[in-house]
Length: 183
Figure (cartoon, rainbow, N blue to C red):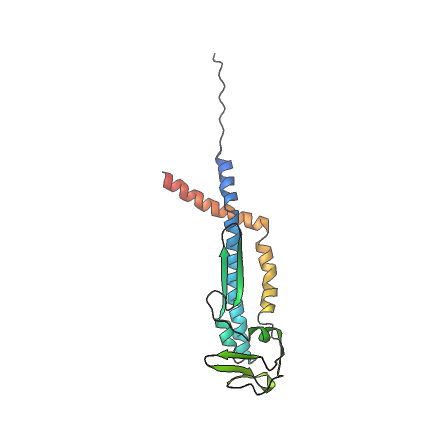
């Protein structure tokens, strides 16, 4: 009879959980990036729908110039969405189209050597001078309505249990790759 004791420990479960936890920051960023990409597409559709419905004659420019910019690394990052973001052209009248308001004498928007100004009835035209300051532009909500609608989707996708499930899938993918390369 021997005086020995053998303890066998299987660390496979702990290693899988560790791999999953290591994927959590990337899973959060992936979720936020996916939601922001979907939001940009929705904003582009919103601006295009304004143009189709006759609410805005120059809204195609807004739709084509909505972008996103992701900055930072896996531990700290931010995503910015809007016109003039991510290499897109700035659309100076995008805010007044969204929120509405009354144009003032200084509400002129230079573009390609001409000046975009608001005329009587809220119509926009390319002019050399502003003729009718004081035009009322109705709020369209083309931007803010989409953001308000998308915010609950972002909150739901950023819930810890949702992100942990994604991290687990991501870890499974990377664990599978590690196992294949180590053979």
